[in-house]
Image (cartoon, rainbow, N blue to C red; front, side):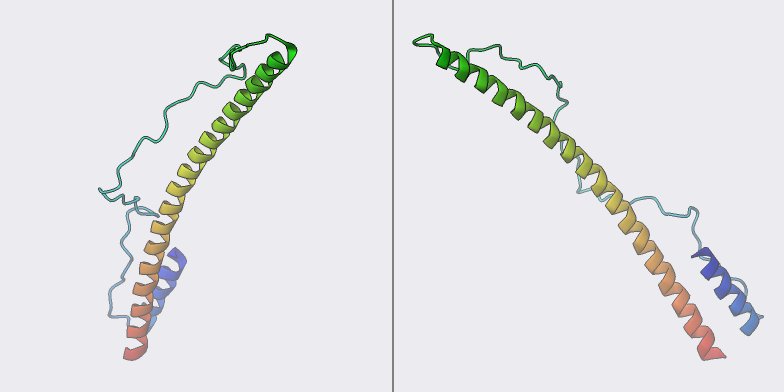
Length: 133
């Protein structure tokens, strides 16, 4: 974009040397991201302590006959609990990643809008020069 602005200014001086040099006014290469006031950050999750050891040490079912089948069912339920906890942690990580990527997409969109405005200004200047020449 800087090079295109430079070329347009040089072309403007060649065709119309009495015109002063016009530069696109931008203090930074990319303008700061504009956040609207109606977008408030809502806490959707709290920090989670990650453990691989199940927090419940048995007792998922009440043992009536106290045989091996009930022990096996309890062990299976403990493993299910552990895997569900791991899935929950993965989902939380995915949500955090998506939030970060959404912020980046918003920044890129704002930068693209700035570039479109600069292109419109450059096109207007070139059309004006073409009509005057």
